[in-house]
Image (cartoon, rainbow, N blue to C red; front, side):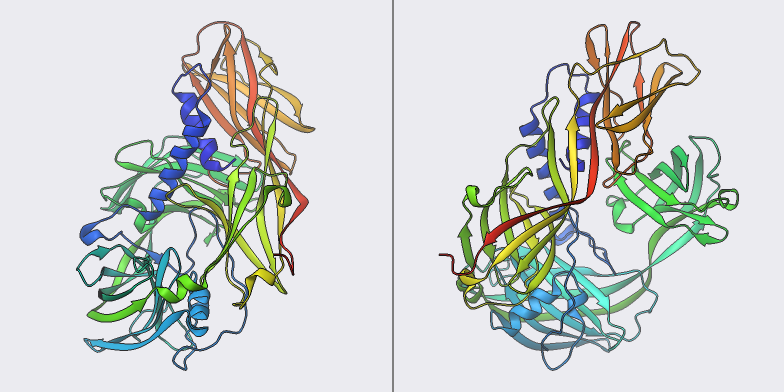
Length: 554
């Protein structure tokens, strides 16, 4: 079960429904929103607002690349392998599935060169470089102020860019990414990029006390994000978790990466987890960050507010027209149906197809079960490795806008005959999400302003529940010191025979072993029975292997 699913359960619970939710419809809705967030919103001229950082992170799962020697396009090694997906595009061009370009345009003393274009069944990628020595070495992010890509009819397509400054050559190295509208044909494409924006992170002091009261509010001095309000501060051994609202005047507020930083003894504390949560206010972002705080350094701790600002603009307009052919990539596609009886595993994934394109390997799957039933559990893994011949590839989980689910891996090399290449999937770091039986109930004594606690074993893990009244709300805290216990995702309370759920407080992805605080406002008088409802644990040592294909298999 994904974290998005856990958050959706919270939303459903807060709606006050007494009947079981439609889990299938719920998760389809979740995935559509996730995919929409990856591909939208579309701004002026049909393009998204884009901020590309030095390390680009996927919405669903990060994919790590192998380090290996790469062939050279146009005689120069610019470091495309350190771009998101750049290695695959470079390799596809080298083996002949794309087209080499050597088109250079000069504008205001800055040159841009297109080096090659390649497609697969979904995407079109274009490699480029810029000779822009004036770009500051301490940049945080790069993007073009405007991008426009059209076909010969003038139809415009949304386009993304990934950029980085290559320290060895001093060039800006990049890749444009758009949908593959070529299909099996050849098309003339026009591309224009205007003004390269160089972003840097600016920090500002804010009057917020890491050891102070909840509901603190402070001005940031940034007109785009006028104020920050702390919703909760949860200090624990060696860490501090803060949930906060960032007021904003922007239509796309997340693009400037606003967040709180914590300084201890004058040094920036490590962020163990930072997540933008579903917004709770129309004019604000909601975020949660867990900081690592060394023992004894909380007394010197202070908050700062940070966000991206344009520190430099490399002015210019670079326009290109070139031909791209989608036939080579389509002819290179390899697809194999995977019989379910040959890829059995303990997870919710039932593998259906292996797809190999010039840019990636995909393992498509259907879900055998989406949510745990009462008293049952579902299994997933955090790490996926695909052994392809002699190459070991790290991959991750992806869900597209049409709710297609797959594991995606970079190509190690191109094989002339993929039908004879053995592949084995290894899954590590098992996550087990469980749902407590409905009849598992713990009675709560009459709540008051004084905290009351009890400890119970849940799947052999000791979990302590603490409850108390805060105004008209019952507050329930849950935590466990067991390192393998992930935590309580959602409790429920039965009062007078009816099940109630707490206010919505979504959990960030990868929230593990942290204190969970839930609020139940306006509970009626009566006997209170607590049910743990949803919880999860981690088995770091677990590993499972699935043979995808074998050599000599038809």
